[in-house]
Image (cartoon, rainbow, N blue to C red; front, side):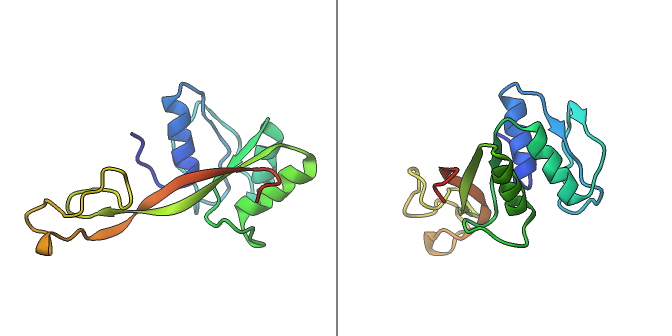
Length: 145
């Protein structure tokens, strides 16, 4: 299992688990940067130029935006627009928030979700669901949004 923060870091972890090499396109600023081990690292660049370089280096752009609706002031959505403009295929992973019980770890809505929490400190055996991460629940391809 890969436990990381952010879609870029998660994608790098999944790719590595599947045996792919990981190329890093770091931004010139550390905010929003996924600090992961890479097999090849491109030179740092400003966000917009870096995102356009990612499109140029891709056969297909796969993105996991924070929102399902296109946003004007979003680096991910800006990258999607650039890829579409250049004719690159785009795959959008639509995400939903996942919640897990802070006591027993069961994921809310999962097939194995128990009706009651088995952890002895849970008040009245009730789950206490907290934000856990994001779950990809469907894949949208270009034109399906």
